[in-house]
Length: 155
Ligand code: ADP
Ligand code: MG
Image (cartoon, rainbow, N blue to C red; front, side, top):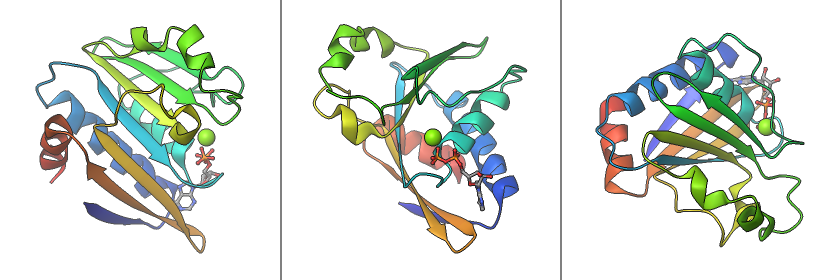
């Protein structure tokens, strides 16, 4: 478990870039799953955007609030960015073919994972973002050996 204080969006973005590099530098036998927790506006999408853009993606990184998932087929890794806030019923994920999303050399960034309970694979890493006045704090913990290896790369 690590706690990081992020005074502004600049630091949040820099930390996201470091996390992306740590993921790419960790041997992966299966997809990486990251749950992003925190209130509206805490910075979940901002962090996802920084991670995706750190790989040179030039287009817009939209919030998947309405589409539920946005995909990024990048040279280094395939990224699925979920936002399950508007998911009415977790069973919808089964109809979306959710299992197909979690293959090797994929990264799943999942906002509002609690909405998909029972239909999501377990997280390798769980990130909690919190308001600290106008700044943010971030806590990250690993739930799997691969998650632990990524955390070690971050240090
Ligand atoms: P979420 O996806 O969690 O609902 P967003 O990422 O869409 O939140 O929005 C986060 C907001 O907080 C943005 O307006 C961003 O500029 C701001 N923000 C991000 N990181 C920080 C930070 N470390 N300190 C202060 N504001 C931040
Ligand atoms: Mg969001």
